[in-house]
Structures are given as C-alpha cells and as structure tokens.
Length: 195
Image: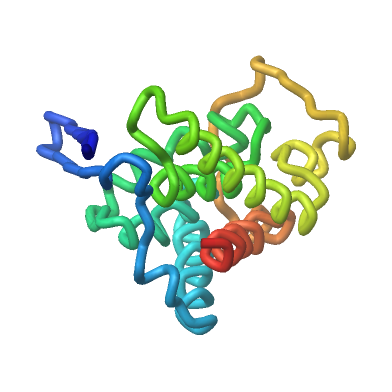
C-alpha cells in the first residue's frame, strides 16, 4: 500500500502556488537528471550559484535556486523566497552557513520524507545531511558563518541573537573579503556529486 503526501506552498499576494507530490512511501525523491550529471553540468550550476550570489542574493538563495529546478521547482522566485531566511548564517545571526543551509534544503527535496512516522526516511535524510555537512566542514573547517568569515575563532560557535539584521552593502570590497562566492559554488559541487 502506498502512502502519498502533498505539499502545497501558496502565497496569495503574488499568486504563487507550488504543488509537489511525494513519491510512494519508502521511495524518496531522487532526481534522475542530477544522478547523471556530468562535471560540466555541475560546474555550470556552481557558476550559476556564484552568479546569483554576486547579483546580491544571499548564500542560501544562491545554492538552493541553482538546483531547485532539478526537483520540479521551476519558479525561481519561489526558490529564492523559500531560501531567503537562511542567508547570513540564518537571518544574519552568523550561525549555520547559508550555503550549507541551501544544500540541506536541497537534501530535503532529494531524500526528505513527508510521512510523520517514517523513521527510516528521516534517518536516510539525516544521514545525507550529515554527509554533506562533513564534506563542507572538511573543505572549510567549519559550518558556522561567523567562523567562516573570520568573525569568531574556529570552534567557538557563537550563538548571538543581538546582531544587526541589516545586510551588508554589496561592494567590490565586500566580495573581496568574503569567501562566500567560492562557498556557494563548492556547496553546489558537494551536493550534486553526493546524490
């Protein structure tokens, strides 16, 4: 017997509606396109993530929007809105890196379960997220935005909620001092090579 779940995301003021049907129970979403991607296709998506970031989108938006279409989410504006809150280390609190969060959102589309008591599905998703996190951490030495930006020593993992929520102005100096352009591209590479 198959159990099906349906996720509907709607936003009335812009007439957005995204309908997504999950696969039968114990079969998790899997993108046949991504599973057969060439290195050239992966690099094209990594470049798109960098391009989105340099246009002013945050790190999470850049990663998520560069790959969301692989899962049928063809409305880029919706992908950008869904991932908007995770930039700057989640709401600019400098916690978990937004590029990593974008990967984790994609992991939910790839392996996430929409069945409440599907512990096997949850475990598969969590294991995949931990794998992605491990690869990102091995590459950059941390998953914490403040540490990655040099605002806190590696391993200190601050959790401050009193930070200024205003995004920094995107200037050439901003891009020079931030490693985020490379991190969004690498997050896409890690993700696409892991599925």
